Each structure stands twice: as C-alpha cells, then as structure tokens.
Amino acid sequence: MTVALGLESSANKIGVGIMRHDAAGVATVLANVRRTYVTPPGTGFLPKDTAKHHRNCVIPLVIEALQVAGLSVTDLDVICFTKGPGMGGPLHVSALIARTLSLLWNIPLVGVNHCIGHIEMGRMITGAQNPVVLYVSGGNTQVIAYAEKRYQIFGETLDIAIGNCLDRFARIINLSNDPSPGYNIEQCAKKGSKFVDLPYTVKGMDMSFSGILSHLEKTAKTMLSEYSKEDLCFSLQENLFAMLVEVTERAMAHVGAREVLIVGGVGCNERLQEMMGLMVQQRGGHLFATDESFCIDNGIMIAQAGLLMFKSGHTTPLEDTWCTQRYRTDSVLVSWRD
Image 1 (tube, rainbow, N blue to C red):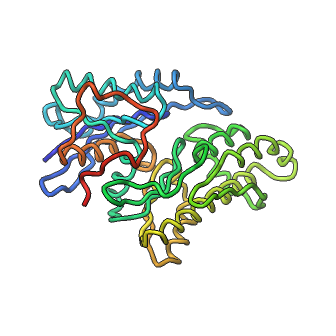
Image 2 (image 1 turned 60 degrees about the vertical axis):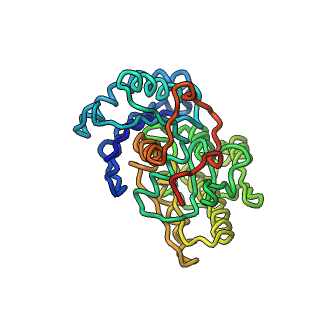
Image 3 (image 1 turned 90 degrees about the horizontal axis):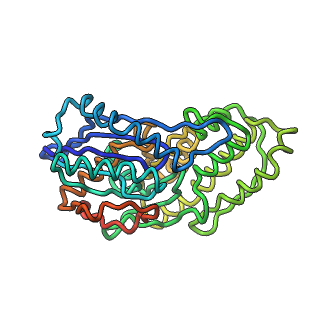
C-alpha cells in the first residue's frame, strides 16, 4: 500500500487530503478536509489576505486529516502539494508546509499540476476511461483530451475563466460570497424566467468571456429596471454554458470520444451538467461529473495525482519545490498512463 498526504491552496480554499492505493492500484479516500476564505458581498479575495487565512488553517487541517484517516506520520509515503497554476501568495502556503513536513518527517515530495489533479480525481471517482475533459473553474477554462502522454488542450478561454466571469457578475448584482458566488448565481438562475440576449463569443475551439462581463458591467443596472436578478443569472448561465457545450461537442467529434468528464469548481453546477448531458446523450455517449466534495478544489485530488506520479517514479527535489502561477496542463508528461 502507498499513502499520500495532499495539500491544495491555489485560490480561496485550503484543503488537505489523504489517499491510499493498495497493491492492485485501487484508490481509497481516507480524509478530505477543507476551509474556504469568504469575503463580504461585492468583493473578491486578495492574494495577501487569502494567504493569511490559509496559513492560519493549514496546520490544524493537517492534524484533522490524520485524525480522520486514523493514521500517524509514519504511515505516510509521500507528501504532495500544488505547484501551480494559481494565485502566488496562497500557492506558497501549501508549498512551504509541504517542504517543512518533508524535512521534519523525512518523506519525499511531489509537486502537482492543479488541473492534472482535477482530471485524475475525476477519473478515479467516476470511472471514466478516456473522456474529453471540460475543466471549468475560477481560474481556468479548458477542453482537454489525452494523447501521446499529454493532456492536450483542444480549446480554452482567450481571456478570463468562466468562474471568474460568474464571480465578478455576482459582485455587480451584490450576491453573497457564502458559500460561493457561483452557487448563489445557480440558485438565482433557477428562479429566472425571462431570457436576455447577451454576447456569445466562440472562436473555433476557443471562447471569450470578458466581453460578456464588460457588457453586463455597463448594462446590468439599466436592465434591472426591466428584468430581475434571477432573469440575468438565468440568461448568463444559459449563454456561457451553451458556449462550453458547443466547444466540447466539437472536441468529441474531433477525437471520436464517447465520454465527457466535467471537473473544476463550476463543474458542480447542475444546469451545466444537464445541458452537457443532453448533448452527450444525443451523441450516444456518457457524461461523468462529481459533486462539490470533489469538483471544488481539495487536497485529495492533489494526493491522487501525486500518488500516480510517485508510483511511476517521480519525486520533486527540494530545490525544485517552487511554485508557478502559470503551469500549462499540456506541459506535464503523463507517465502513469498508456
């Protein structure tokens, strides 16, 4: 058996997870604990303040994870941490703790690409074999397929991520950040009934979300005299998710895939899953998605990807445990897959 401790802190969530692989490679989640830095309505989270929150939470979370798993330090084989991409300040928290624990406990380190963590967690939980992956979060929007030992990016955002667009729209209409802006937009959208025409920008395999946001920044207050907040949330979701479905379908056709896996924080949106599911069903395929326990950033996804890397012979020397805010998904050699 091989056991990994995973640390994730790339954005406003700090998570610690413990994963075990048995001799046959069967994965078992032993602990998955997390805290979220929540700011007042109408505001975002700044790197400095977010990092301070994470520093205050990380050690208690490590202790809690070990207690939940019923393990001691001597049971751990590897410590995994998010190397990037993400926000600089928060990223450094998990990297610093990982280095410290590695030196204290004499345990090897593995630096993990955040997106690879989402993909491998999704594959493990759902059983998806070789899907087209839609990765949608606050910092990333990518359509991905595996080929030639890489998770190749077939399409992506040309500017801001879809989650960033949703979060900033929530600020415009002053929605709460608790538990998350995207969740509150989703709940409002369920009550909307009038569709508002908004910009729709798909360029080949790529998407653009900044123009939609700029349009709403200029017109939202005026539109609220005719439409409700619920109508605007409904319209924004339908518009953005239709763009994602279009590009994902094109990727499916290109690679001949029959499976789609949605990962990332926006991936737990039920309306997105419904729209994507209809498209995949029409193509005779199958949609895979997870709930918020695994869609939203967490330590267990870093432990899972790190374990796969560790078992394929990869470790990260101490001098290479730096973080990077830019870490392309397709720059990682996927040595653990055929």
